[in-house]
Length: 92
Image (cartoon, rainbow, N blue to C red):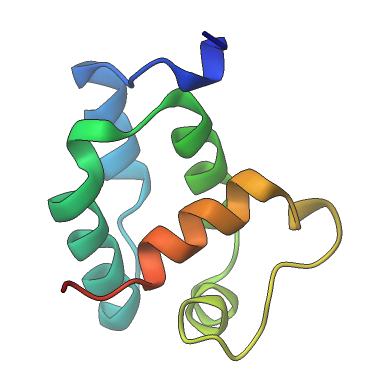
């Protein structure tokens, strides 16, 4: 098993949640729903990709979440796209 596929530990998860706090309520709603549904299965790869997304400004992140834009350049990786789809997905 790849190290990136290792599940994130509780301390790292707590730090990640803190890192994901945003200034725009709309982004917070996407992120809160993401953690509600996926936190038990988050891997180190997911955490790294989510951290990359959190480096974006609020409006740029919201554009990605609302499918107004897609990841570009160095951010256009399979891990970022996977986490972005997890963020975008609606509950069944």
